[in-house]
Amino acid sequence: MSRREPTSAERQIGGGSTKRGTVADSGALKKKELLFATHRHWIWAVGIRSEYYERLKANPPSSGDLLEWFLTGEAMYLCIWYGLLFTGCEGLRKNGFMVPDAQTEIDAVYDSLRLFRNAIFHVQTKY
Image (cartoon, rainbow, N blue to C red; front, side, top):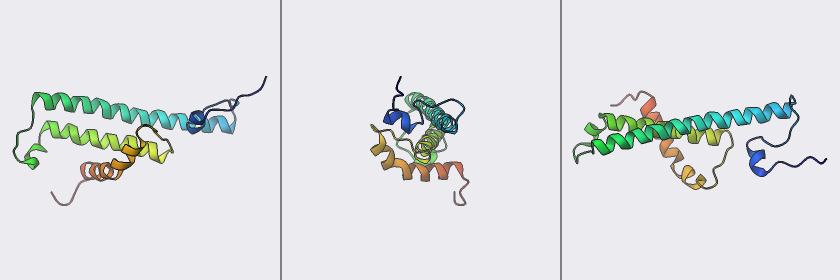
């Protein structure tokens, strides 16, 4: 019986045929765990996004002051959503994962999301 070669997708996440208990197997397991951890952040971001849209539908913003709007619960969910979205994108990039159908968009917003996340989750000296 011949051993099949893993597909490119399996190689990307460390899958394919390996002997259990080998160094290669522990590397494959580690890569899968990183993918699952990244996916968890993505799922959290999707959940927060859903809550944001529900709140926005119930209480649409007025054409008033943007700074005042950022003090509302709706804006809080937007900020948390963007922060979690960045952690998902960061996990993908940091661990060498690619999402072919969305990679161009991820790359386009990556730095903006990073700066936004930093502004939200790190205390700023200027208010």
